[in-house]
Image (cartoon, rainbow, N blue to C red; front, side, top):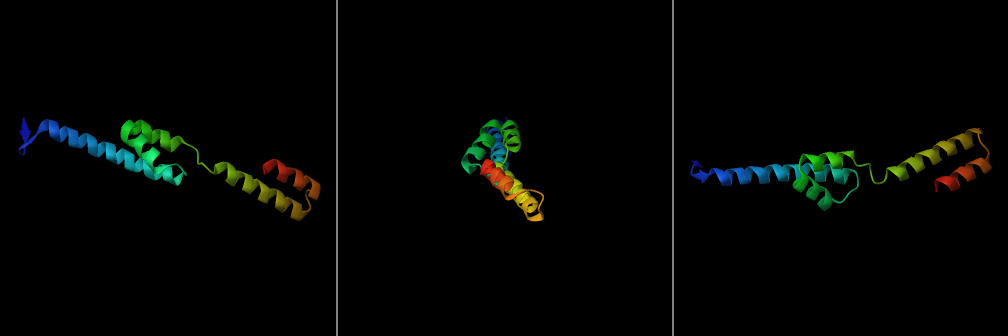
Length: 98
């Protein structure tokens, strides 16, 4: 069977490739925002489709641990500056976080 002179099998193949490229593109965009490799995220979206995209969306940010430690350190620094904790307590927490 042909549609506009093109075989239905070819149209189906083109459709599948376009959908796979779309999932790969969005997985790459979301993955790169989280700090992961563009190629790995694209491959996950391209080959796994919606499952790959969901996996990428559920991955934690790569540097979220560093941001949290920095935020905690700033909180302890503010407590030190306000006099709520001593320098020794601040130094202990700083060693734990770093």
